[in-house]
Image 1: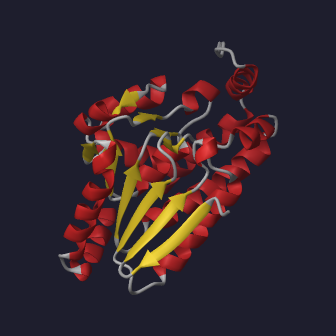
Image 2 (image 1 turned 180 degrees about the horizontal axis):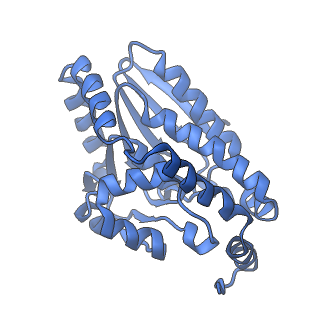
Image 3 (image 1 turned 30 degrees about the vertical axis):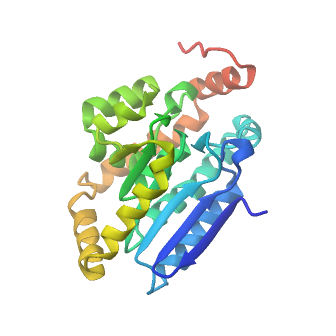
Length: 259
């Protein structure tokens, strides 16, 4: 069975992560499948809404697949190359020319957070929790991911999440504007369907044009030299001493001891 599925029903596309037994942890093949699905959807004139969901009741996405992650922890070059695939998939999702909804059915961590923040709306169950944890591995969140987070929750709260790797519950996520709706599990489908219908009831041209306008307004404003410098800091993290210690701590299942 495919670990990423795409189904189109009329004007609505349903993209689903399908590894419930692994908390929908993302492999490189899954990231590529997401990117490929977005390429297909971007060329589909009939689709007006995408619902991004996940199988099971425990996790929307627990982040990177542990087996792949452990193999990459000893290979910084592979880790950096892997991130290129991740960023491409997220950028394609964020750039889709119609409204997108993340239907968050549980734990949402790491890459799951990245996917959810690329969507226009986020609906979460009360049991959902959220975290971004690169600081625990001696790494950085990408510039694009960081920008999306700051746009959603603001600078002070972004620092709490990024500096500390802090986990927050669904109620806090709603208070911080990280999610739009928090509902009971039994109401998740109904609330998502209601939002889908509300989107279908307005002009597709207006939604697409407004999304493009908002992306322009919220675009990065730093100059090219600064952008390249920050990218260098991000890339260099994969070769740093803190990453070596963070990777060892992760593999050995112990707290990291950063200098």
